[in-house]
Image (cartoon, rainbow, N blue to C red; front, side, top):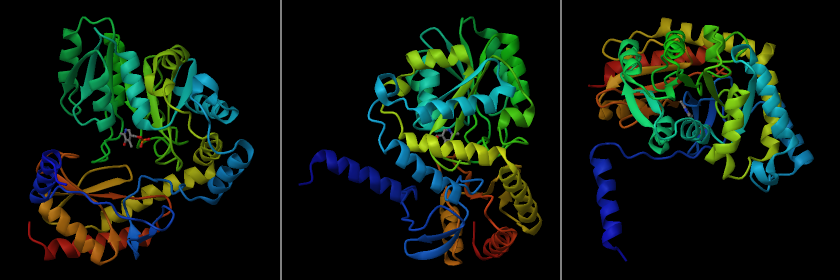
Length: 397
Ligand SMILES: *Cc1c(COP(=O)(O)O)cnc(C)c1O
């Protein structure tokens, strides 16, 4: 029976179709990697955030199996009841040690997802009366965190340090938080963290850095954005996700031990949820070793090579490769229709590159989001560039 409520939703879905904004999922039969079997067709994939190509790494598969043999599958309860296992504790120690060069009295807390880590940080650190200063291009999970936090939210324009400084000067709140992505996920730009941290130190504000796309990728040892810039401060609150470059799942917050203890007491998405399966934490110990070791370094070097070859082989006339030194290499096209056509044309050549449309990016800036992984071959980047050069010439718009 079609009730009025269902009819409303159906009309809203038809509106998405009319605006070319309906999304659909692909079903993948293969492990995450460059060669994918997608809806029963083989494709060369440039879509994942598995930047180091660890998601199907044999050492991680083995570590996960070992973790399951040792600890079983479910954790059975939340961390504060009985779900906090030895593997979780070991992972937190390892991550704290890994980020310790950049934080004072570092401690880390493992979360089920980055989304939940962001909600916990913002709600726990920004009570009523606090001021939150949020970068305009922040990830949806940070935006939702600011909506849930009781503090007052102020949005500053993208990377606009002087606008932020004016806002900070005007604030008389006892608690101030500046909140930013480190690497903007849809354009690959790196936030000016040294300048942001200087502003925060001058104005007594926390700097909350969501390094979802930097952890494992940036910095000589893969410690992420703080290592990339050589930053260290007791006012930093660092969030790294573990389902992207780390290849597994979950996330962590690293900060001064007092901040972490407060999150254990007041982070609602930490407290009121079942702890992640301990086997994941066990596998992540191997993941951190891979990131920090020679294999991680080699994969980061490969990413730089892929970028260089892609840039050199690309000769676009109307479309624009967005300047990015990260494995996120978007091609700006403009309207949703042409982006979908470009993505479909690539797909006919068995190249899988997702079309990114509003509301994920601002209207008029729809783009192809190319991402490389440490397990792509140099030839893969060349093949994609050649196809883009050709397809741009055959499409209008
Ligand atoms: C992916 C992402 C998250 C969410 O992390 P999950 O672990 O996938 O929930 C948070 N912030 C940014 C910038 C992201 O790209």
